[in-house]
Image (cartoon, rainbow, N blue to C red):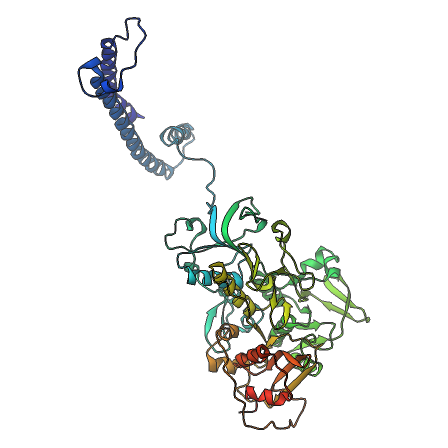
Length: 613
């Protein structure tokens, strides 16, 4: 405060003399003789003798300069005073406290002065994240399809500004390892690192790219070279298609030039579990995200029994993964489903039964033809009653009964949802409306060979996302790719599939005796790849050449070590499963693309060289 007074004493004489000179000029101009002042012509404001206008301008500039200079000097001085004040307060705070309240009162007075007089421009409201009001490329959803689209957009338009909006807290990541490799990791901190060893021995992260790959959403507008930004924990709740803008769950609005919907799907649950009450729901996991993996990993280490409801890909993979853990921890793992065997909706019955026996050997108690009647919480455990009278007592349930495509934006956006397959209906270029594309699990597309379809697999998310990104930048390419999917029941049994694989279709299987190299682990060690679809989608098949090795008769028809299963519709191959046969997917893709009838599928199976050691 003393310093401020000193500053004022220095400035006061200057201000006083300036005001005196101004009053003298006013008198000279005749403004004190009772007459109405007349505006001085603009020409007289320049230097010259008329009316003293030049002097007025000089004095006015002088006063202004003095005032600004004084203000700057005062602020600088007071800032330095504040630093000395803070240092002094810190010094006093280290001394023993006295009973007198005077120092506290002085501190409050000084704080009030600095807050409201020295720094009056500071805003007391909390600083919020400044989101971009406009994104040239807006991608809704933070999964595989969105990331593939972002990478594709940036490849064709290096300066593109891409904003990904996701309701998840994580950066884009791949989902397959959540039910596969992560469970076989030897690292006790795998739930924190989310790094795993692939079957080929190479280690990698579940995330597509590290955080340094992305830019912050608030920096997207000013990024000279563009970039990809991820806005986490936000959900798009409304789309204004005509206005090319969306509204988030916090009422923020973002406009766009091109938009991709890649919202994926939501895990289904059994209605009887949803109606069973809060206590049952607390002990039920719907497996889909990273947090679900972490939660189930923790549960499996702290309970005595886990029951998996569902016999499809996800349910069987989790059953095998937890089954292996049961041999070490004594965990009881139960799997139940309404079919006669594992993957009963996909595999022919004989192969489904063989797979079920394989799952049992992994330490899993399998209950087939099991229809759940009710689930209740009793004596701190869950009691599952089946329609045939069987009762299962368990500590935790994993419901793996399918996926529901997320089409929440259909109503506000006026987009068509397919009544048969679900998902947004799109054209051959994956476009739903002008400036709106759909990719991944949520897209219902037209397959020129197999008709309208909706696919829920990693490879489809990669390829459809990539194509949507290309078309968002003007490529106008149709979607013709036959996506594949794969499932591994541990490192020893795995299969890859393409097209329509439905056990209700007629099938023809050709098998051979497996060797040590016919496992997922051995195949990836030889190829150097881990996530198989990422390599397969880049390959194209040349005209395959059949092996000259004759097809030997199987000594044991129950030993399905490796082979090829053809799925037929109107005598034409529409789907193929490669059972412990790897790196042959381009051949299978070409067979389906050709769409020809084959008189002898044993000869077609030779194209895959399954009889060679």
